[in-house]
Length: 71
Length: 552
Ligand SMILES: Cc1cc2nc3c(=O)[nH]c(=O)nc-3n(C[C@H](O)[C@H](O)[C@H](O)COP(=O)(O)OP(=O)(O)OC[C@H]3O[C@@H](n4cnc5c(N)ncnc54)[C@H](O)[C@@H]3O)c2cc1C
Ligand code: SF4
Ligand code: SF4
Image (cartoon, rainbow over all chains, first blue to last red; front, side, top):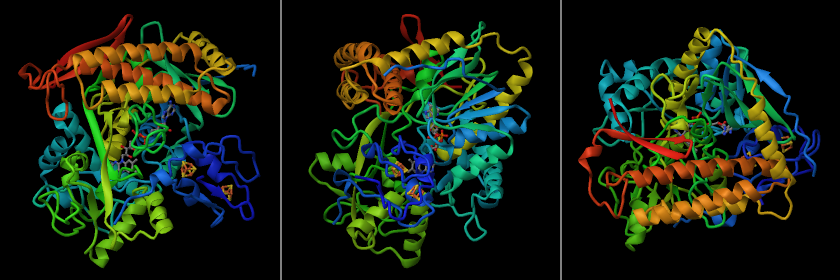
C-alpha cells in the first residue's frame, strides 16, 4: 500500500508527515519513522517523496485499480 | 473516549484567511502589505496543500511584451474558454488586467515564470487561436508563497479545519471556528474580515473507481468546506446547477491533460479532433478542452477507447513535456511510468472523461466581495485556475484590509456560542459507539448525487433524490461516529458535502431548460428567459432560496 517507508534509512525527520495533504501519516511520532495510518487516502501527489531529504527513504506504489491502460 | 474540548482557545487578528492555496496565500500577503494583521488557517500544511500542492504549469496571463497592446483578445479568449456566460465580462477583465503584475511578482520571489529569459506561451489553444496560458515552473510555488507570507508577518496555523463562520450582531462576518486535525481542540478565530479560499468541492459525485473514494483528479481534501460554511452563514452561491467534467489519463485520475503533447486518437489511429495531426508543443491536443466528453462518447458508442498518442514527438518536445509534467504535479504518473515501463514516446495512454462535479461556488465579484459584509472569497471557491486564484486572491486581500481599516469598532461577538455549538457537536461525534463511520455517508452522498442530480436530470428524479438526501443528512447529524480526530475531520467534510449537495439539488430543480452542458431531460430546450442570467442560491431559515440575476 502506498507510500512505503524504508525504516533502515529513514531518519525520522518528519517532513513527509508534516506536509502530507491527506495526513496519511496521522499518529506518527516525532523523531521516529512515520506510520502509514491511512494508505487508502493517499492522493499520489508525490509531495512526501519529493520533499524527503533522504533519497529512497520513502517510495510510492500505485494501487492496482489506478494502473494506466496503454498500448 | 471522553472528549475534553478546550472551547476557550481564541486567536485574534484583523484578517482571517481560511485555506492557504494560491488564493489564500496571495490574499494574506497583500492584506499584510496593507498593514493588517493576518492569520492563514489551513486544514493541511500550506507548503503542500490543495490543488496547487505540488505545482501547476499553465498561468492565464496577459503579457504586453508577448501580446502587444491587445489585451481584449486575451480577455475574450479566456472568457469563452471558461464558460464565460457564467461570469461577468468585468470580472474577466479585472482578472486578466492584473495578471502581468502578479506574474512579475512571482518571478521575483523565485517562481520561474520565464523559460530561458523568455515568456513561453503554450497549450490550451488551437492553431490560429490566441495564446493565453503562460508556461511556468510551479513545482515549488506553495513553499515559496508560504515563505513570502511569513516574511510579511502572516501567522500560519496548519492542521486546523475551519467548520463554521461567526457573524456579529449586524450580520457582518467576524471570525470562524475550526477543529484541529490531530488533537482534541476547537479553536475560535476572531477577526474583522474573513477571506474564504478553501478550494474546490471534490468527493461530491462517485469517482471513477467504485469504492475508491480518493482516486480523484483534484485534491480529495478539498470538500467544498468554504461553500458550505458560506451557505450556512447565508452567503450566495452561484451556478451550482452547472455541471463540470474533467478528463485525463484512464484510471489514474489527475488534472493536467494540457501538459501532454500528443494527438488524441481512436483505436485505428485516427485523430478524434480536427486541430492537430502530430505532437506539437504549442497546442497539445485542444479537442479535449472543447469537448471533455469525447472519451466518454467514444466509449459509449463502442468506437473507443481514445488514446493520448505522443508517438512521433520530437526529442526537444519530449524533453519539454517531461520538464513541465514535473512542474504540473504529474510526478505520481511519472513514477507509475517507471514502475510499469511505460514510455509515452512508444505507448499511447488511454484517456477518459472523469466524474461530474458542480461548476458553481461562492458568488464573489472582481473585488473578492461576497454577498455578506466582511466576507471575501477567491480562487476555486468558484473557479479560475491558479491565475484566477492568485489574482483575485491578491485583490480580495487588499479589499479585506481596506474593510478592516474602515470598520473601526471590533466585533462585540466573542464567538462563544458558535464555539460551544461546534464543540458539542464534535464531542457527540467522537463519543458515539457502534454507529456508521464517515465513509458510509460519503458513499451514500456520491450515490444520490450521481443517480439523481447527475447525467440524467428531471423533476421527478430530483424530487426523489432530494428526499433521500434529506434522510441521509438527518442520519449524519444523528449517528455518524469518529474513532479519532482524523476521522472526525472526514465527518465534518461529510456535513459540508451534504450542504453543497442540497444547493446543487435545488439549483438543478430551478433551471428548467437545457443549455450548453446543462441538460434536463424534461426540458430539452433553451429557455430565452434565462439568457444572460445566472442562478443564485442561498440558505434561508426554511431552506434554499433561488433567484435569477442578470449578468451585467
Ligand atoms: C494536478 C493539477 C494540475 C493543475 N494545473 C493547473 C494549471 O497548470 N493551470 C491552472 O490554472 N490551474 C491548474 N490547476 C488548478 C489549480 O491548481 C487551482 O485552480 C488552484 O490551486 C486554486 O487555488 P485555491 O487557492 O483557490 O485552492 P487550493 O489550491 O485548492 O487551496 C485550497 C486550500 O484550502 C485548504 N482548506 C480546504 N478546506 C479547508 C478548511 N475547512 N479549513 C482550512 N483550510 C481548508 C486546503 O488544505 C488548501 O490548502 C491544476 C490542478 C491540479 C489538481
Ligand atoms: S503522495 Fe501525497 S497524499 Fe500520498 S502519502 Fe505522499 S504526501 Fe501524502
Ligand atoms: S521525509 Fe523521508 S527521512 Fe524524513 S521521516 Fe519522511 S521518509 Fe523519513
